[in-house]
Length: 85
Image (tube, rainbow, N blue to C red; front, side, top):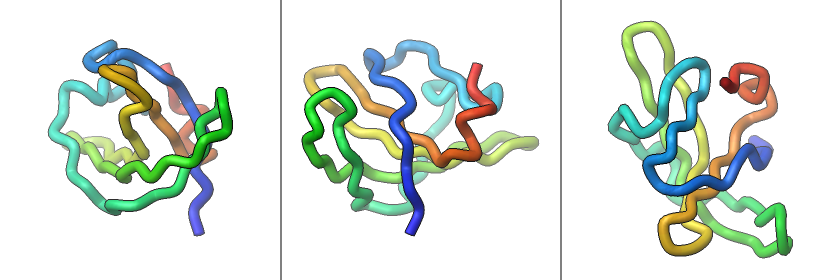
């Protein structure tokens, strides 16, 4: 089972890059509809979706979901955390 690590909470459409790809510039393809993650602030359990984005050189997977109105939580696999900008 893959462990997802909290990366950031940000406003919808706020620039955020993984491996140089701004996630908002791509169509998100749903890979898994139910990924259990924990809210890093209050410890609440959420079930978010896993998404995949890609361009001609990179393919990136991440978990994302809405914490509150327009506030999105992003979770990454441990090996992706070093590719953040």
